[in-house]
Each structure stands twice: as C-alpha cells, then as structure tokens.
Image (spheres, one colour):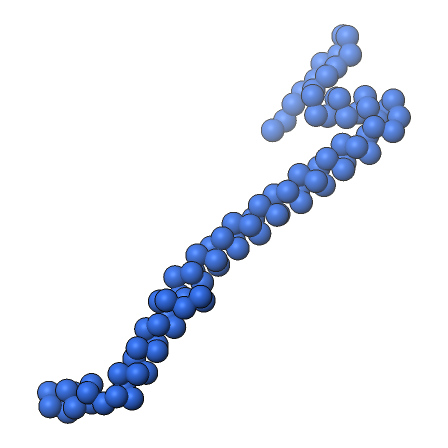
Length: 93
C-alpha cells in the first residue's frame, strides 16, 4: 500500500495536476478565498441597497406631503406628533 502511494505520487502527471489544482484554488485571480470574500461583500452591498431603497421610498412619501398646507399639517402630526392647543394626542407604538 505504501509503495503504491509513493509510486503514484512520483508520477509526473499527478504532480502536475496537483500543483495546477493548488494554484487554481489558492493563488489564481479567482481563488476560493477571494471568491468567498466577494460573496460576503456582495451580500453587504445588497443589504445596503435595500436599506437605501427603503429610505428613498420614505423620502418620496415625505416629499408628496410638500404640495399643500393640509398635507404639511398631516405630515407634522404623524411624524413629529405636533398638536393644536387644547388637543390630546394618544401615541401607540
């Protein structure tokens, strides 16, 4: 068994293929560690894009309140909990 393994490992084709695989997996431009880092970075970027999309939608909703006085009052009451004199507001979270 041991002799067969040594004989097999001395074969130049096995050595060449092994070196090639090690080179591809660890040292090539698209190596496995780089690929994993890029995948993780890609996830972070996608999460950031989703967050920015949500913020953009929220800002667009706020901008639509800018058109008339009633909308501005509604916006101030909803987001900043403003109230008129002699008025009671109940806030539920």
